[in-house]
Image (cartoon, rainbow, N blue to C red):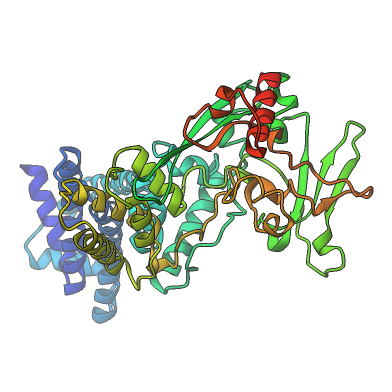
Amino acid sequence: MEFFKRYIMFIQLLFMSWIGKLGVILTSTTFMSFFVLEGLTVIGVFRSTYTGIVTYFIIPIIFVIGLILLPIAWSVQKKETGKTLHNVFIDKLKSSGVDVQDFWEKVIPIVLILTVVNVVFLVAAGSSAMHYMDQSEFCGTACHEIMGPEWAVYSVSPHSRVPCVDCHIGEGVKALASAKLNGAWQAVSSIFDLYDKPIGTPIHNLRPARETCGKCHWPEKHYGSKLVKHKRYKEDETNTLQYTTLNLKVDATNGVGTGIHWHVSEENEVRYSSVDDIRESMIWVEVKKENGEYHRFNNTHFIDSTITEFEPRTMDCVDCHNRATHIYERPDAAMDLALANGYVDASLPYIKREGLAAIIGDYPDKPSGLQGIEDRLRSFYAIEYSTMETPTLDSSIAAIQTIYKRNIHPNMNIGWNTYPNHLGHKVEFGCFSCHNFMQHEQSDGCFRCHNRHLVDEKGNSISDECTLCHSILSMGDEDPLQYILDNEFNTFDEHKNKYFREEYLKTF
């Protein structure tokens, strides 16, 4: 009780002006509000990102403002009365009938205790704010318009349980300080609309893959080969199911010396320079030989050009796995996956064709896109299949809208293929989509380097052989192991199948 009386006497001393009163009100209310909101968050009443922003940012800032107002109030009082701060306090106490000497003996411990409480509170709030800012939900939802698209695709990615900071912030005080300064600039750019739409890639200051990917994955581990079966659906009335089956040579029989992971094994070093340093159109590629020299392949398209070359980049995981987490889908692949998983009913006539046409339509904004998808599909089945019962149409439309909602973000100028995935390559017309000079220039992924335009001084190009990275067991066929099952070979396609079968059996 005695302590409380002393506290009240000290507070009355601070109420010398309206500024002091405002400071006391701000500090007291924010102090209590912080613990109330924190307690409600802990027990699960609040789960909103904006609650965290209020609790860990706005409240501590207002608390500090309140503390700053107190010495300002004293300074104003001193200026108005022309007396020292000590004399102002003495006069205030005498007018209240309080014994001055006895008062200071009782109040000084109160001042010290409150000072310690303030410091502890600010340290706790700052620590909570740092922890809160390290959570993926904060990264993805605090700046909803900017990071909303990245959050949408991250949330359903294979790395959705890997915290954002594990890849985007390094270890140590320097990395932490750099990240927070960068975050401050991002806040400013968000307020004044200074950010790029869409956000540019690649991110050149991303942490090295050895420090991020290498914590869970490492090239030295022999993964052998991996059998991958892709389900594809034709755009016909029955949505005919086709299979493309590949045996990926991640690292084949001889370990990391061969196979796909050859590129990032410690025994090998691949460097390259790309146009505008965006890692898509290669100016040259070179491989380090055993004697320490580099074997270079120059792009014949740029021999006589005056393209500015940036700092050469040493190839690592993210040069192929560039969308390992923030994965934007291709529309046809997204439709195939939804059909394969049963989210879209494959028994609906032409659902692959109509769904694909609906999601690639040109819409001014997302609400218009979602409504346009529903209107198109409902109209099609109402007109073309008016007598047919379609109990799964609603759920199929919802699944197709989800594809659009996840991948398309007009407010950030993100459409189909805004962020291409370099893992693998596009195949639209069978083998000759690659083995054709007209189509070859349009290939991406592996064919950024593995193409016939990158040649060494002897005119030899980097191999683009299909079986270099995978054996092909079927490609758009009715059976997932079509090339192994065939016995008779008469037509060109059958001879092709025989080649792929023998290659697979010979290698494995």
